Image (cartoon, each protein chain N blue to C red):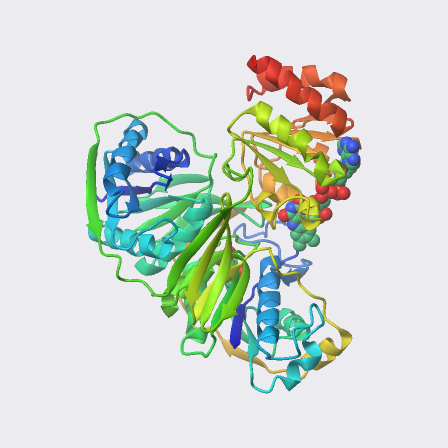
Length: 332
Length: 269
Ligand SMILES: Cc1cc2nc3c(=O)[nH]c(=O)nc-3n(C[C@H](O)[C@H](O)[C@H](O)COP(=O)(O)OP(=O)(O)OC[C@H]3O[C@@H](n4cnc5c(N)ncnc54)[C@H](O)[C@@H]3O)c2cc1C
Ligand SMILES: Nc1ncnc2c1ncn2[C@@H]1O[C@H](COP(=O)(O)O)[C@@H](O)[C@H]1O
């Protein structure tokens, strides 16, 4: 039986935590199909050995085999090289199912691989099952206003899973760690990475954060954002800042933080909507969050219609108190 | 410079979604349609690039190109291409009113399978003279975020996704990509494919003159080639309603109770 491939993600040599979700999802599928799970990532000749070793940690979630795919010409950001190498690897090993993460890099990579293989791709899947040997997945459409159940015809079945939705399950096994080389020649020329400019304080992308603290126009001025940044800091390293479109359009916050139909779709375990009214386009991006907390001084704000817990009040009084109470709880 | 922009007509972002009686589609009646918001950014990017290259009027900020479209003197052209039903013509006319020079409608019903859509679009783009083919980063209906890079593979052209700003100079497009933690700068050799996100481009409004001119611009209609879809939508459901929330209290006094609930009831702290 052909394997299920889990496409892992590594940044600066470190395995990204979403990779464990990808392997868990792949393990669930493989258990039904009765096959093995391979986890893989592309890297250059220099780093591929280290990368393959790092991937071995995925044995905890049920990877039977991990592979560093060595691709000539690879360097950070070279999605064109990764796509060609990965497609070659999949063709060579004849995987039945390939699971990507629907992260920024995953969304850039997966469609290229799919096209090279001449196969359709289901993006941003939130549920998956195997029915009659075929993958049937659930994914939000119309910005989360409906859920589609979609069957994938033919093999390999390619899908990407939404971060923070699939549980990381322990299913430890002995793992075989390998370096394989793949031919990355089959790609268009003329793609060059010229540089990267980090934006301050955005280490964790809002779409991958476990906790999101979003601010809206009710924050009144960009200089007030320290109030939310402090709450985020109190919540720890897995928390990130988000924003409504109103504040992004006003230039108070970068578009990278925008949550909603024309921003990011987020599914954190805990979402704070601070001084956000709750317009339909905002809800589209965050209504599938685990627990939603809203703070708004208007008791009739639509955000309270989706919030699990609400406080009616002034954000400038509530937010600092909240940060303080959370710090007390955590004992620091 | 010639630029082709692929645009999709989608339900308005405010639209209420109801499931059709068949259960595998939405109720289309009474739904207002718009150009997908990211496609508007892509159209704006195309207009600014062609204006800057002397395709129409001088690149005088947001001044509508619409008036100058007819005087483009073959210097540069923005073409819109859409795969969609007959009614998509309205959206294409709206794009022509903004300043695009010509439009092509590939008549058919696009589905969930972006690979099928990509093949339909590539059949039109293949062998074309576009230096750049632009896409929105995603269409806000199926939200698959894939058609642009798939078309690029079919055409064998380099492709940058999630691009906030494009500068073209001497056969090279410099693209600023909005990525995790910052911006990545990528250079593409033309001809190339780019998917556009929110960034530099603020969509313009159509002028009255633009709307009048649009009526006389070429809008070519063809039957879309038949391609087989590999994804079958079996069912659509409305998302489960969220359990009734509660107002914990008013003002800062409510904070201790909120924290207790998050810890003991919701178990998220
Ligand atoms: C095509 C399209 C796409 C869109 N995409 C998005 C999207 O992706 N994301 C998005 O967010 N929006 C999107 N929108 C915009 C959306 O319709 C709303 O305009 C926007 O979400 C409003 O942002 P807001 O809640 O911050 O501001 P407002 O609606 O102005 O709400 C501010 C809130 O703050 C409260 N407030 C004020 N002062 C205080 C205080 N001191 N303490 C507590 N509360 C206070 C007010 O009661 C109010 O509820 C889109 C719109 C369109 C047309
Ligand atoms: N039916 C279509 N006709 C024209 N362009 C399309 C169509 N579907 C998708 N696109 C383009 O591809 C982009 C990404 O769409 P998607 O991959 O469906 O999210 C859109 O923003 C459009 O630019």
